[in-house]
Image (cartoon, rainbow, N blue to C red; front, side):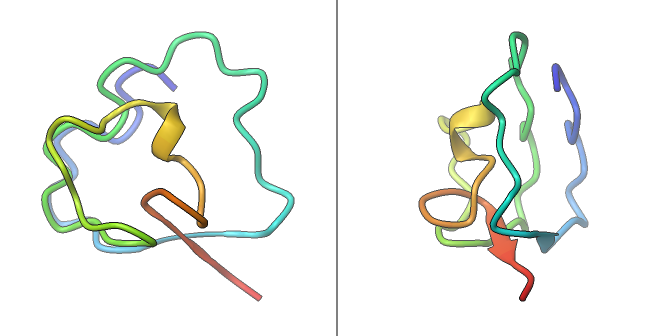
Length: 65
């Protein structure tokens, strides 16, 4: 997931199921860098760009039911 969404400044929503995890991710640097319009549980923060925020509870993803 290293640089996965970098520069996706038009990206607003990433939908995931409640089964999505990043437990096996080993490289996540700059995953969300410059995704300035991205919103999920939180709004974009340039200091929060790693896989820690790849979730719908405390990150940038949105739960798709």
